[in-house]
Image 1: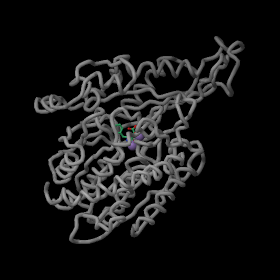
Image 2: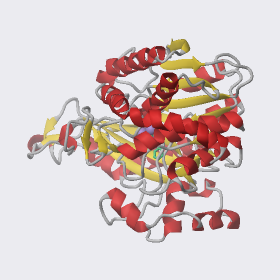
Image 3: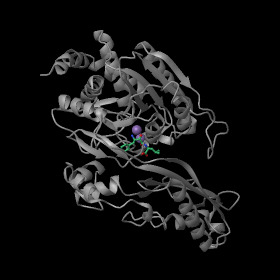
Image 4: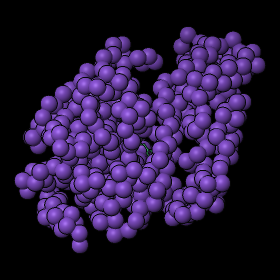
Length: 479
Ligand code: BES
Ligand code: MN
Ligand code: MN
């Protein structure tokens, strides 16, 4: 055992001892329904920020700040809706130590018991060594995980091996509105001296093997509003007599993507960087197969059976998903209504070398053109709700090396190096503005069900995850 491994032993023991306290802390966090996408729950998102502030202060943070980001830009339903604050905090400022910025998000996706949850989504429940609840894995578990690591150090009177700068946001699930500007503003201020950025907000590829992640897709999120009649109408009285917004919308939405996931908007696929031979070889080393995909999706609906095809389509090709229609009738029963106004939502996952602004133009032109072909008397407006860049980096640096050592120490296996199909909009901004590299160091597993019903975090992932994050700081501090 190396000297550093020896010195981590008491810390790991302390983390084991603190397990009940850590679960309690996550229980409190999950109990706050900080859903950024639900305007009516905005006060809860703010409450979650305050919860973090009080925890950070109790753990001895310096210079804790709640940074106001002003009013949420349109499209938005509630007038003058304030964005939730960014939580900033520091632990230590020793010039002899390296400085790590940790980022995470304290907002979560919406969740309703009626969606099919087995238990109340905002009550953390332990079943079979797993913790169920909205945000357990995305991203409250990891954010609280960092706090847990700080607590274990504090309890032992153990100095942190690095200076830590925390940046926690409350709008990640809604496009990280406002955060870009703050990072640019603070690059030479609050964030000055940051050597590297570590984000724990993704997942292992499967359920058994830890990974380190060096790429994400971007996400451009759009809405198409179609309106006509002055109010919702009786389909017996107006059906066949007026142009129906829902019919127009479904026609247009039906032209965006085919059932095999091919994007039908001209110009989009042409922007995608070609596959190189070097890249092809990378996929061979990854432990994953279609059975794991099927297990995670709870089905056998995979388009591709071959591992390489699956990974390429998740990581390096764009995709277009249809998410929903606001204003449409969706309840049980058989309401004979013609909705007066409907808003279709869809997003495109972006990859190198797509140009986000060009993509918007292709999308708008195509949709407006398709709608014009319908010759409907309704009106259609297509808008971008938010966009976030893709990010791909080189995983050969001190930060990845430290994370690989930490993973090996805790999990006794060398991690796979992966990319992700999901998005964390702010990643590229950190890299560019702070001129540092970024590491994605996941806590949860590929079947955790982020954004889905019954989201969970396995207790071993939570506890060993706290050890991994802690060991990462120690290895990086010595590099
Ligand atoms: N934690 C995810 C990012 C993620 C997703 C990483 C899947 C790895 C795999 C993050 O909270 C998230 O869900 N981001 C949104 C961003 C979007 C709203 C711009 C996403 O990917 O949908
Ligand atoms: Mn997340
Ligand atoms: Mn998420």
